[in-house]
Amino acid sequence: MPASAKKLVYGLIILCGLGALFWQLLGPEANPYPDTAESATGWMCAECGELRMLTARERDAWTMSEDRVLRGRKATGGAVTMGSERTIFKCERCGEFALLRARECPRHQVWHLIRDADGQYVGCEQCAAE
Ligand SMILES: [Zn+2]
Ligand SMILES: [Zn+2]
Image (cartoon, rainbow, N blue to C red; front, side, top):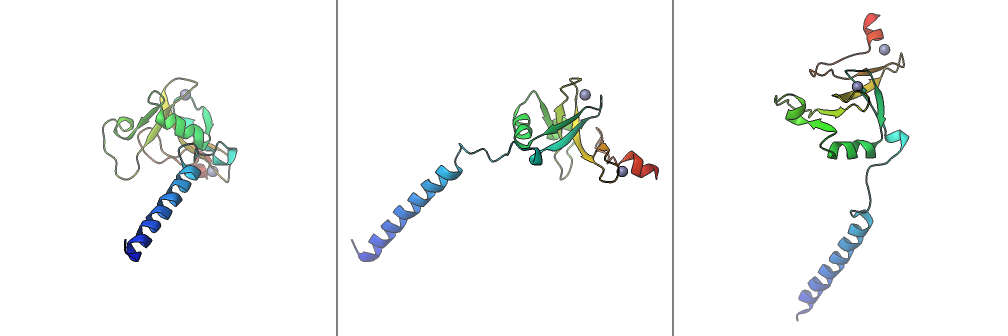
């Protein structure tokens, strides 16, 4: 075997080794979604007003669970919306698919929906009243 071919083979072996190492470090065992309060996002029910904090891991689990989530066209009643794919979760309190992404107004510490069930932007009521 010529020297250059040998180098190539060794190079490949080293690459494979590194790849296997990375796979072990980042492999399927590691859940990339943290289950921490800092990772949590706020979700609010458009029907009953329930506020539910979901950690990144909970959110991922709910997103994968067919009976808890409506996504994309299912969430928009068949309409194809540009850009943002909507996610609607099932509310644990009232059982409706109406749990939508919410945010807390930094000025009033009031939680409100970012968009309503029809996809219209919703602001803080108290800000709007000023
Ligand atoms: Zn509800
Ligand atoms: Zn406000």
